[in-house]
Length: 246
Image (cartoon, rainbow, N blue to C red; front, side, top):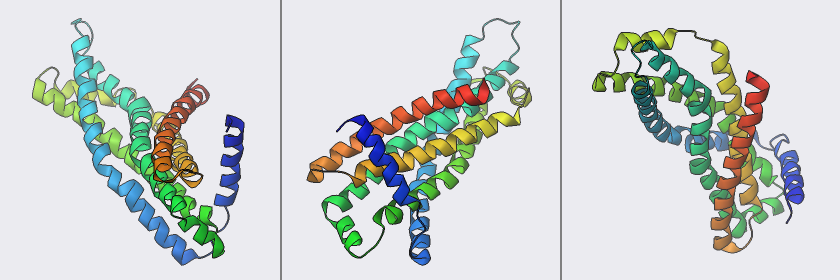
């Protein structure tokens, strides 16, 4: 199947997804379930990776500032900018693409190969709306909170790394965090996060919904969904940076 056909089927899928839910109570239950599966259960890995990556960024910045004329406050400034601009919105989204994307594809793909989706269609249920829309809403509205948490823990991890290594002082690091604070950069990161969250929810859903070939096909579709979700996040990141920062 060529790429143009995939793109066409993807947008046709979105047209079915964004129809009004048939039963609000069932939809609400599905939404809360997806918030737990896709959002709350991702807090641990995002917190862990953000904390240690923030420490690594701070230490590497400190190691590369060897000139005594360069103020140490630049360590905190560089850590803050690196985490807010790229690490938290982009790198965390790529991590979520692997964790959440494979889960979405395998869960929907398993329903497809076991004919559960066909049963929903026979009962007159809009299966795409029922399966995909709660995932989109859960990721788009919950992931910005995850990314804000990642920003905080990343900057905090840099502060802890400075205390443990004695490579820079707490005062210099905090001064660097406070220096030249631009609230628009956080808004820029959150805009990217919302778009990345939409990609994370819809692209794996597409691969899972149209999977073929039984359980082997589900595994293949899971791999393809993670690859394409990551590629689309990277490409979207480039164009969003061009539009929002230049």
